[in-house]
Amino acid sequence: MTRFLSFLISIFLVAACSGVGDVQSDSKPVSHSTWDSLLKKHVNDQGMVDYKGFINDSTKLNRYLDLLENNHPNEKNWTRDERLAYWINAYNAFTIKLVTKHYPVESIKDIGSSINIPFVSTPWDIKFIEIEGKEYDLNNLEHGIIRKEFNEPRIHFALVCAAMSCPRLRNEAFTAAKLDAQLEAEATYFFNNSKKNKISADKMELSKLLDWYWGDFKDTAKNRVEYVNRYSKVKANADADIDFMDYSWKLNEQ
Image 1 (tube, rainbow, N blue to C red):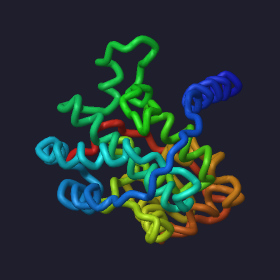
Image 2 (tube, helix red, strand yellow):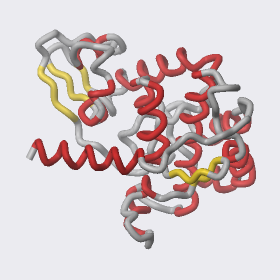
Image 3 (cartoon, helix red, strand yellow):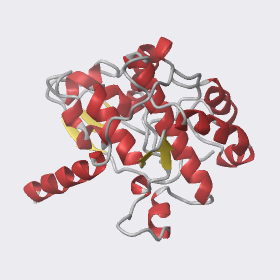
């Protein structure tokens, strides 16, 4: 069973990365101020989202998405942090767009069951994003670009798939100037939120993210206890039992 699951994950990642190639672009880094103002207006400190508010502000949201779609990051003009901030914001903003397009829904996963596109069964496989002529789905952004190119495990506390068990949606845009501090803040918030992780000296009940994506963290810590203890106010013993919490896909709506 374990080997079969590993095989399925491998097939999934190959599919997610396929079709993601280099785009020839001379674009310059963009401002995320419009996205920042939308987040401050429609997302609270706990990361809960006012989707109706985003719908009412659809003109402003579309203007920001148009900016992203006309400016594909490149290594010539963009620093690493400028590119990473762009892709994190893009993933989160396009996720909001996808939900508002199909709103109301109880879960983002409901979108996958309601669409009628051949060979597409989840919302993360819908190719509704076009950036300088290149088509993407959300899986392409996360697995084909962000995880593949940046080797930054803290993105798992910043990418938000519109579910209650996801990390909170930060109510400010990620920017190159503040990126490291923002990622540290989201990791700290995530591990000290008892709805996402329950930490005690003898037992850790962790988010499934630390199960699904632990391979992304292995180069930064020898085990999960060591990694979690960097951020958790409650410190677990080295031999603490580890279990994983059920993942709620209920919409992260205010």
